[in-house]
Structure formats: C-alpha cells, structure tokens
Length: 339
Image (cartoon, rainbow, N blue to C red; front, side):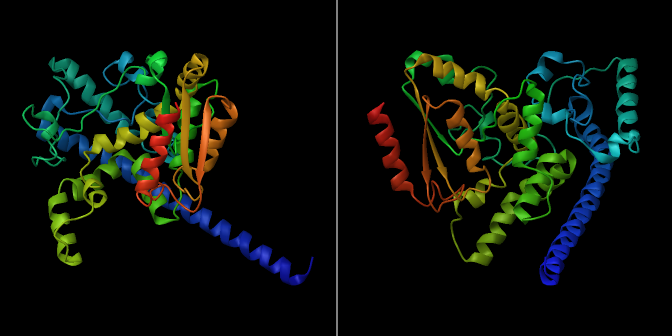
C-alpha cells in the first residue's frame, strides 16, 4: 500500500472516530436533558392538569398505573429505548420522583381521573381541536386497536397498495423487531440535519415536547411569519400540517404506528398470503432515504407470490407521490382494474 493511500485511509478512520465521539457526547447530553425535563414537565403538568395529567414513558412497561392490558398494545420502543446515563444509574432522581408521587397519590386516595384531551402544551385553536367537535367536518382522529381492514376481511379485499412500507422481517421476539425499527428509521445520528431532528423527536420524549410547545402550540404565529417572508398568501399543505401535531400524536405516530406495527406486519401479510385472492402492490422510490428500498425488497423476498414491487427511478420518499401525482393515480387505476 502506497503512503498516499495509507494516509487517506488513516484520515478517513480518524474523521469517523471524531464524528462518532461527537455523536456520543451530544446524545449523552440529550439523555441528561431529557431526564431533567421529565421532572420539570411532571411538575408543570400537575400544576395545570392535576390528577388528569398523562403519564410519560420514562419508566418500565407496566409502571403506568398497572395498566397491563394497555401496555401490551403499546410498542416496546416506548419503554425499551436505551439511555446511557439512565442505564448506568446516574439519573435515578426521575424514577424516585415518580415513585414518591405514586405513593403520595395512593396515600391521599387520589386517582387518575382520565387522560387530558387537550393539554396545556398543545394548541387549542379551532383546526387543532376540531376532531373533538361533532359539528365540525375537518376531523383527523384515528384510534386503531384491532386488525387492519384488509387482514380482518381477506375474502372481501382484492388488492392492497403500499407506498414505501417500513417493513422489517419479524424476529421471534416482537420487542426486538420494534426496537430494530426504531434504530433503522430513526437511529441516533447527527447528519444529515433532518435525520438528527427525527432521532431527537423519536428517542427523547420530553425534548421533543419542548419542540412541540415552541412550534406546534404556536403554529399560527410561525405560519404568519412564513407567509411574511415568502410573500405568499397560502402555504403548502406540508408546511402547515407539519406543525399541527400534538406532542402525543407525533410521538405515537412513530412508536405505535411504525415501530409497533413492524412486529405485526408478518402476521397480517401471512393472513393475506393464505387467502390466495389478494395482491399487495408496493410503490417505492429508489432514492428513498427515509425508508430504505431494502424494506420492500425484503417483503417481496418473503412473500414472492403475494407482493408485486414497482420501483420508481430517481424519486425519493416525498416525490414518489407529490412529484408525479398523475402517474401515481394512473398506477392505482391500473392496479384496481387488474385485480
């Protein structure tokens, strides 16, 4: 090996080591910050919401007022997230605070009277709380606790179309699959910036809630500022919808919808595969950085007769639809006509 190649290899290795070290320090700080914010939000929640405040997921599964049936339906990524400082026992004060408050509530005879629907840290504007009003049409509140429609009624379904499905082969231990999904789709990394933001919002419940308090709770102000700087009267729906999340909707969308469903997908696909009458059509962009193309390839390899994979060249996770709306609509029509 020449001296030039040796120097280049050493430089790359040193740069990687430096990057990994900085990443470790940053997420170590976030571990500490999230533990501190856990206690801060607990105090503020009790002040504004009293006994109706919603518990967080910093403890172990089953600690949440003994709701074993509820916790069984939750993704293991909610409670199984690994924190360096907490695992080393340096931040036990947050756990001790929860134990103290639980004992005090038991002693006082106070009980949790139900979860808050609209929290103090969420926006209370008409569009954000419309799903709670029967007379308002713009509703987007979905709670699913049963089999998806296709898997529950395979005899009545002809085709299922999936766009960039976050699929991972299910391990024997479902918890492992959920945690694998969290590391695959929101792994701890500093670069690129969007991936760093996604990892922070997915791993750190209370740090992510700070973001929601700052941006989501005040989304009307940010929309006004964006209109002012862009000189546009109307904003793109993606720019508007991004900040119209409550903290819990954003949190559970990642953990219970994506990570939690990862351990169940093989079960549902097996039901469809046995029916012999359903086709699962996948549309996936080859430049997708959010959900790797390997996810669709793995599903195709595991269920070759069930799955049809349509790989679209030179498109990513967003432009697979938004950049080619007419083509996407035509492909759906073709799928429906052929099934």
